[in-house]
Length: 229
Image 1 (tube, rainbow, N blue to C red):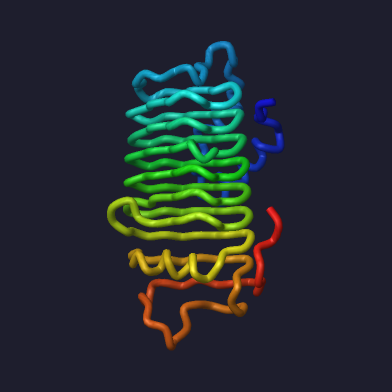
Image 2: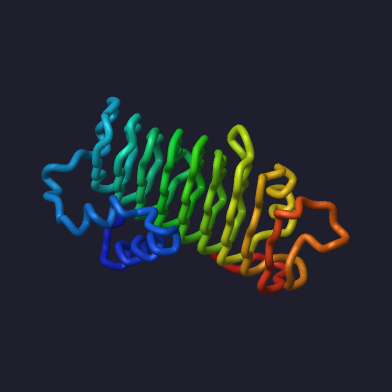
């Protein structure tokens, strides 16, 4: 059964909106205005559209394009490709499956209500909120990327072209090797807060390590194995 936009999901999006300094204002405005679902478009839309609003009822299995940006609401999983530009909000109640892709070239704010096993790629500014586990690929752009992962980190984050600013929060386990791989991409600034990792509790990198003065990440709990998803 498709995942519906429940009150709980709406509240979680509203929470992400506050944490990300009003990243999902279009989405919350859409829900408050109580648009008639009969007037919305479905996942069968595959042609290029201008800036607009698309409501996909259930899983998104066909490609969607909004070259001038807008709002995409999916009340299920994403298994196809969404291509947006300029400014866009993409809210997915379910998962981004392994075949699911979000491509953007401007400012793109993404909310994923479940797991992310697919790809999110943006050459511009990204604000990405993933409620559960991340095991896919995120390609960041410039000037900045802000990423929240609610559970474990099992994926890959790296620049799409150039490395800008990157802020990362992981609510579950992230191995130290993954942290250092991100730092090796030489972001202009890389800051992270990690709940659990396989290193001592503390602030990194240490004074003995060679790293950018702008890089800093903290670990809240030492854990030798990832917690269950």
